[in-house]
Image 1: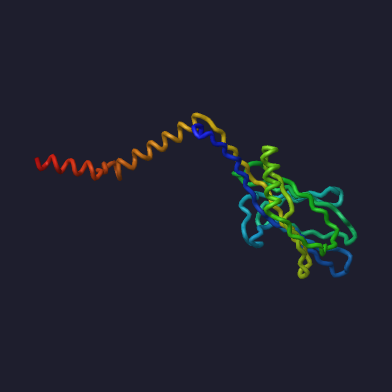
Image 2: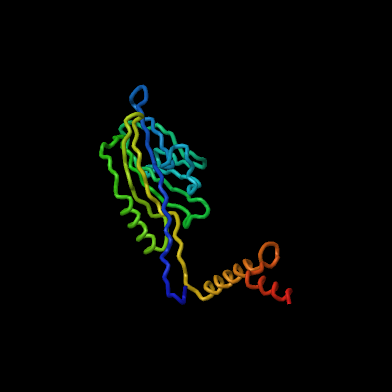
Length: 214
């Protein structure tokens, strides 16, 4: 790597997840029963390997109790006064192997399902998040990729792109030497053959036959 003077760009990993909010009126039409789900974009039952747990808190902490979701599928059911608006904060705790501990997503709730569906340019969003991750030298950045409404049951589904890891490659002489040693050992093992038995090349075998004839 040093001899070629190559610069390896940081590797930035992205993952997608969807957050859905399903709602339904109570029988007396005074309350709204709602369910929050944090799930994979591949389906409600598909696992989210990069999420360990989800902490749900509310800016209005007097009227709403926080919750910690430790098991998948991550789901929270609550009942709220119909006219009440509030904002949730989701703290997504990443699994081992990710580049940071967590990220936060704020979700305003007013129980008015928007008909303004949109599907943004995913490639452009990922490029922007990648630039931010490389510039800030950290991960956890997130952005909305898609939002859609479902009429039955009445719900709003939002897809997020999240930076879950960033790996930088450092050019050092030791790393180059270690790679060279490994390559040398690999060549040596190929010449030794299987179980330590030497593998004879065609030229060496031909030379031995000539000696035996003489």
